[in-house]
Length: 222
Image 1 (tube, rainbow, N blue to C red):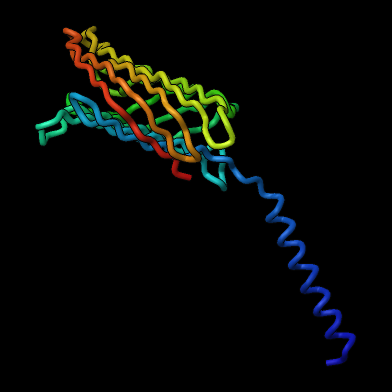
Image 2: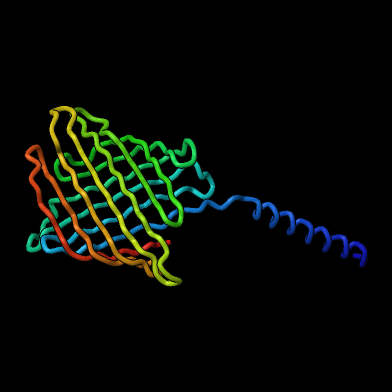
């Protein structure tokens, strides 16, 4: 093989590598929110929450939205208060997604579910609303909503506050099924948030009220 042929082959390989790298560089990377995980220790119960909102890198219109809430009263080894939902999502426009999947709670078991997710966020604010309905006989209809306010205090700390609420109504029998209000206030250092917390819970048609006051710590998992 002549020196000229070797030079042509080497040049061709370099050009091909450059083309591949250039094509990879043009593939847009989806900016996914972190997984939010929170533990809350209160005077009545221990509570745990995880929120996942992710998009596929290869098909960014498709994603997954999941919420897990667990609350166990002190001295009770059985968890009677939980709610889990997992949904595939499809983005209609920026900030509006359709969702479909399941919801699971101790009263109704697992039910198919469909809904809509509205979201808005920047460095200071985050707002999410998720109205949904069971796809079964005697369905529950509910709305989950949360607002976070997290302004910068210094180079190391942000103020953190959150108002989160849920209202669930049974359409088949026309009664209140479940609702809550969660309040959080504290500080964020890097990916860790901590502070004071309060949960206000209402259960069943009689709206039996149980409250929980204490402290929380939360992390953002990227």
